[in-house]
Amino acid sequence: MAFRFRWLAASILVTSLTGCLALPQVGFMLGRIALSSMGVENVRIGNYHFSPGLEGIDELTLLSSGLALAGLPVNVDLPLAMVLPAGTPSVTLQGFDWQLQVPGAEPAAGEVTEPISLTGGEPATVTLPVSLEPEGLDALSSRADRVSSLLSLARRLSRAGELPTGSQLTLTPTLPAALDGIVTAPTLTLDIGEPADGGQQAPSA
Image 1 (cartoon, rainbow, N blue to C red):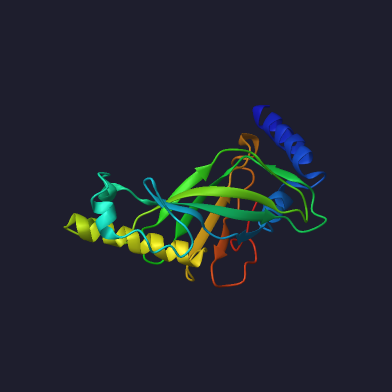
Image 2: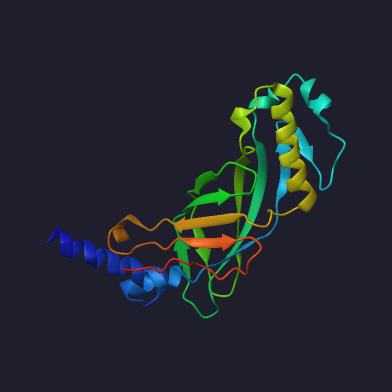
């Protein structure tokens, strides 16, 4: 009886999310969400902000700043556009888990817990707060080398104003609890430097 109730609740929830889609179509529809990066904004180390192309902040300035910069990451804001194909029923995601790989930086991960409403053909913007550390930072023995490595990564991101070619962002939507175990959420992949074509992992029911 409990299992039948769960299926009934899931069916009602799917109807409210996606109109009249059957359960197997929910994963397929989520897999059609297209992702696109809108650049990199607000690059900073501690209280130091890097305008695009700014070269005025040097190692000496940071070393004498009194901040423990050798232990701070490079923080950036990553605006991301998400859009369903035109004509697709609207859906509200419960959030998503994300992972980001940037050449020259350690992998980063996080989650968005706020609901995200998507309407077919209309982009929705979500901004990811990302903290990046240079690859191999822990292996650098001197504070000066660590600060120099952080500066190099911050300058590269601020100068380009976008993620470097070869970066990869993956998102896995969070489904309502009633769909857990019934619908498998697809993993959406955005490869920087290659055309974005939405999810690349086939969803299943």
